[in-house]
Image 1: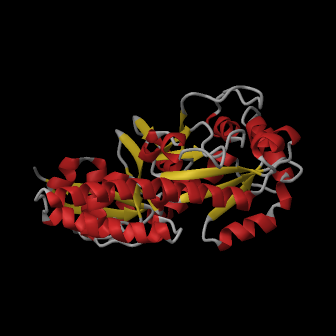
Image 2: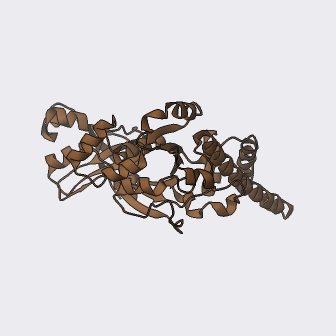
Image 3: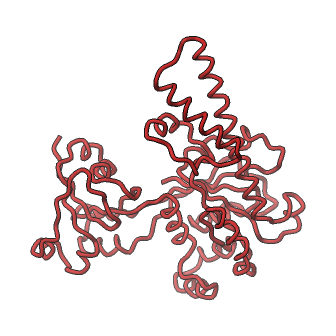
Length: 358
């Protein structure tokens, strides 16, 4: 999955990116803005994969990954033009992590305004809604022009209907992510990749001393329906260079059990509604990420399109059952192997072997 780290200039995006990925990009507040995104891959820690790898001793062990894109500051001023202020490739990411500065800094306060998380969030939502509105209006104009020229297909009419609903939503200053679409409309608008349709996680970037003083802001943001957490970005970046033992000590001192890499990975899974299933064997043990509610044939397609095309059955057992009984042999003896059809809904922790024929 691809996740965009976005936010105003000097909000600490790159500091957090460094903490996540172990990179060492420039974070001095006097340094010029980057001209392109930093990109890094973060392995999703999953003790289940570690245990399965120890059991099967495969040639390869593959954990799930998250690809983080650290974009230069966007929506810096009220006068920014949203068509040019947002980098087009942000749209290719599956979700946004909005990083908001809540630490005090007199120079940054003078340049970008005092740290006000609710105001910053509202400003970002407004700008994303405006950017989407411009796209919708332009597309509707082209559709109407096409009608005048005699181009009026059922597919275009479905798109027009969906876009008019979206325009009404945006004009009421509401984001698209709050809307539901029937399958035909969802398919018609999928290519637009609207900004305000993306799942949005809020990270309040605090100083170490202010880390435990953000409950009021967090509560207000969560009441708006957002998933939100506080992070001490500079502290987390410093942790990323320490030994595992020292890291645990410093985290405990802050009242945390997990580093930002593990916490943010879990939050991204929650934000996108993802679960993990596994494939195992002597060649490879691997984690696969899929949305909750995915059926067996679509999960098979995640592994390879041929498995979905020639799907016969999914041989299935659970990680929990395997850890309880110790081996596939014992699971078979106890009747804990199942054969599931195409419409079986894969559960978190399922271990699948796809039977197929092409």
